[in-house]
Length: 268
Image 1 (cartoon, rainbow, N blue to C red):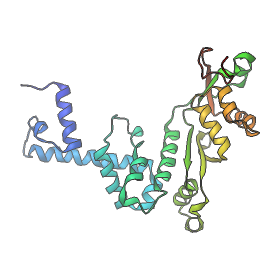
Image 2: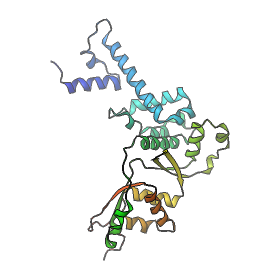
Image 3: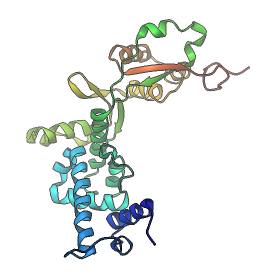
Image 4: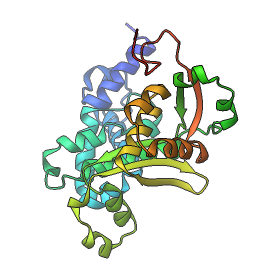
């Protein structure tokens, strides 16, 4: 019986990802090379392509552990979490969490955090463009509705919280600055990082914790009234002004008036 295209694709996926060649092999013409050997060639190319994609997204991680260690870790990761999309720029989101659990990397407790930063940088690099929010649009919102404003962040904006100075490690490794690496104090964390693509490229900036947490809830869609009530302080107005002036917000909407999370006033 001739398989459908979907069945053929599924059998080929099992061959590439799981090494199960029996079913796919029945539909491969030998022509001088056994089906298993032909499939092995494609499987090797498949693996190399994914390892290369991870190398491009995590260059500092590779330099920290070395090329051989990185490839071994990458292949273990690929075996457990193969791509779900043909767009390889999306492949690797789970790699930092994998490294956190990867026993051979236990001697480098900061490795997963450097990987999280690198993934945020990669996301920022490949994010679509969006016009910044025009502050004049906010001025048109009535005073009674301002508490219900929910912001949409720029697609390239990312936030990373680290126990270690991951940004300093990342810069020193990529700059091949041995003196900076030697001077690093791993106990100098935590670090609260904001990542965004700007006109000059991807920026990685440090914020203090109160500002970072306010930015986090605002970018997660927390209504403005609640966000300011939960993260009140002298930093709030300046943080919001900076988000607008630096073009870190792309738009906003108003939460429904009946939404209990849209206002910070106590219910009557």
